[in-house]
Length: 408
Ligand SMILES: CSCC[C@H](NC=O)C(=O)O
Ligand SMILES: [Zn+2]
Ligand SMILES: [Zn+2]
Image 1: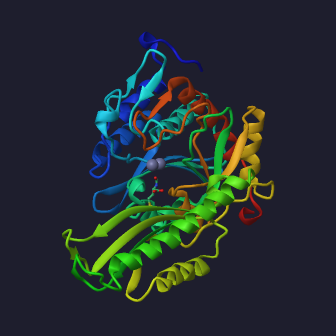
Image 2: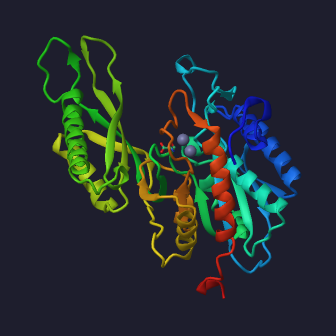
Image 3: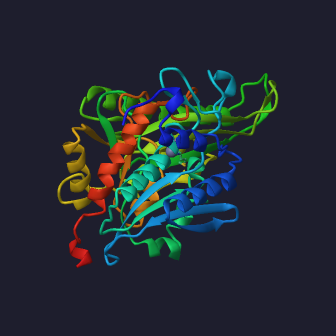
């Protein structure tokens, strides 16, 4: 497939741009419009469409293409329907207009993360169906809400439902990241998000005095310890060219709260941190480390979690994993270079892997700067269309993986 002029836009691109115009933007996504769009796609494709309301107003939409051998486990193609907010004033074009420039770049929130992939799945299935194919394994496309705020009202609930178990997912694909080089990034694991709020309490008083044991003083010590740890991990990453970002633990100080007036020493102050813990870290020991940083700073320091993922899983990337073998074989045949990595951020794949579904994070966008969550998020239509091609090759291979030992 090649990109075409504005007068003859490829229908897959037109559909992509229609989907981008639906305002599923946090914190108040229009999920109703997205579900209606997907129901219409199901109708057009002749696929069954199941809606599972996992929480009031939070619907997971499942489009199913049945395989010829129902005893086999299925392929699950997941994508989230929500997108992150925008700072409109920093955009060159309205982020919900899906403007396409003269070179073929489509500007929109969700262009990379991850409305492109939802439409690529749908269009790959459409093409394969039109060509008359049928595969042994069933293909389910799941479209989930709430990913951008943690998936707690989306995939986290869905994987616990009987409707999810009934899908009998054997393998899943979900989002990855664009890659600015010629290569394609693929994620086989991800770091665990730990959002930690440290609260320090101490002696209050008049701002003119040398008060001892203040909340600020002690909080400063904790912040210093954590930022020193950050520096150590950064150096470890910098000094080893074999390590990729997802392989070390990152942390950022993202919030400081407390205080009421210049001349009043507050009795309490807090600092919030976004930790992303590498999957090989002993999480119990890491929590002890957090405790000891707090204890070392003095009395009256506590911490609480905003997010605390404790079940990191790794999907094997060798031929012991038949799904990886099929996935990587197709990429090799298509001459695509893969860069297997640990996802630095959190995706819904963590919930799938935690219930035992091997899963890869893959967004087929090479030669594309990483612009997710950024201003001017955009994707070239030719890269988008190439992605449809790639899934058109991946799906037959994945849906034809022979029965696994556990399935015979
Ligand atoms: C940890 S819950 C938030 C999930 C979010 N996912 C995508 O950006 C992330 O910050 O990684
Ligand atoms: Zn995403
Ligand atoms: Zn995102």
